[in-house]
Image 1 (spheres, rainbow, N blue to C red):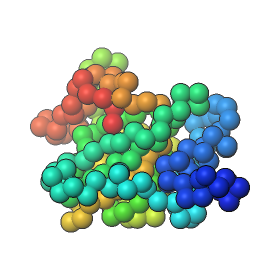
Image 2 (cartoon, rainbow, N blue to C red; image 1 turned 45 degrees about the horizontal axis):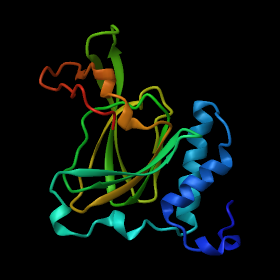
Image 3 (cartoon, one colour; image 1 turned 90 degrees about the vertical axis):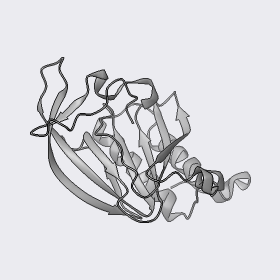
Length: 205
């Protein structure tokens, strides 16, 4: 565990700083996908237990910025040497992502509020047409809980704030997702629902 008492200039580190430093300490080199998931989950849990908090700027209290039904991403740490990014997401009531994938390891923690996560399994993939998926699970994750995409049926998913208050989550990804397209630009369709077609040519989160 990191001993912040030995770092007087950082006695009160931000949550994102604590997570990044914990990852750098436990992941000095590339590891297996599952090991990175465990390390990322540990980093988030350790920082929360330590009582580290988000910087006030990420809370965006300005009412004009709190768009109903919207969510905003703040990529606050990008470590090119170890290849991970730390992202804070702010979710207004009704906010929902498109069905999406990441094509890399991911672990996240709910800091405030609650989020509904819907997981999908890939039913058809011919290598060129849109992916066809089936819904396999929905669950509500509340503050203090963590999740990941370790399972084969959790790589493709959708996230939604079904509550009446803003939710805040912190995510660690094994890549900079702003640099790749959602489903490699091919899009996605839910099996049996012709009207449910995911975006194409969009970034992957």
